[in-house]
View 1 (cartoon, one colour):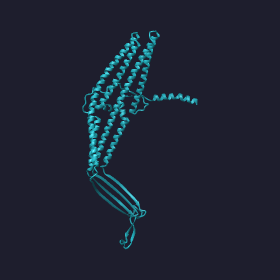
View 2: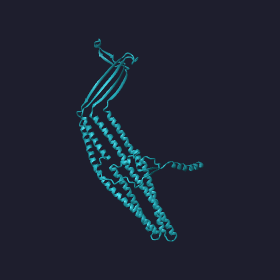
View 3: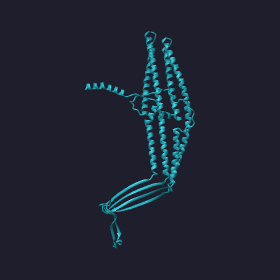
View 4: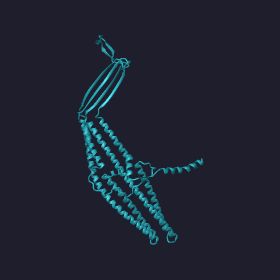
Length: 451
């Protein structure tokens, strides 16, 4: 038993190492991530199914205007024929009632029935509504694709920013370890203090803690990216674009017309759908005209022998029917529904107007935010380089005995603040770019596959 456990404990790490080697790391650009998400994300898949379903709904509405053809047949064996009583006077037996069995023991029939609507305004409008709903579903798919594209873009650059943060912290650790070695040497030679070495050690441990937290955050963000892209959590991925990659090659221009934005087109289509619903309700007051026809044969036999091949009695019958239905009074049901539909239309009109106003406001704010964050990135880059320069000069003075550990730690706090400020400004700038693209429609550029 012990030998088996030892063997398993020896083999398991080898199996795990082999499995880890089988998982290949894949590099993903921003556009590759967007394409993968648009193809596989659950929200987009659901919108794609809704679009396909709306197509079948249109076919269902169209079916109401097409002819209906039914073929039917029956066979009946009357085990006991129906008995009726007639006055005997009819058969020369006056003064008494006579019981007679009437009918045939075997009865069969075969018929074909055709129905066709000639005029039904409600059914015609229902077809128009289903086609408009199909357009709405297509716009819903477009909206879902743009939303997932924006979400992936934000997460992509957030993850890249976290990666940059990790690199900066690793640089801080390298610099702090060098400082710790210098402090140890100075303490060993009698030129330093133990408290200075302890301060450096505490600061170094803080950097290690920051690095651990940043690595955990990056892993969580990559796992979220895998979820959005519908990739296995065990798949190793690397984001290949840079954190400062420009999404907008040039500064965005002012936009006043948002009529082509998917949200506006959705509301415009919804408004048209509300109008059609109102017309459909009112069309219930119009007459309905339809035609129907039937052709059939009925067989009546007393004996089952040679039922279909022997001499028999087969009687054809048929009819042609034109029907007209005129609604007169429904207790004001359609009037109430029409008024409700009118309220829905007015609500959509108000929402459309409000949405257009909000787009103008949001785009103006997004433009200001974009310009502000762009300037912040430039300022924070300069501030970071200056903080690195000051920290380096202070470290050099410390080696020469012209500065204290306290001076170095103060400069490192300033450097850490400058690093955090730069990373925050960088991500805010990326977020502002995504916001601009979502409002002016440029987000589609991330979805469209480049040749």
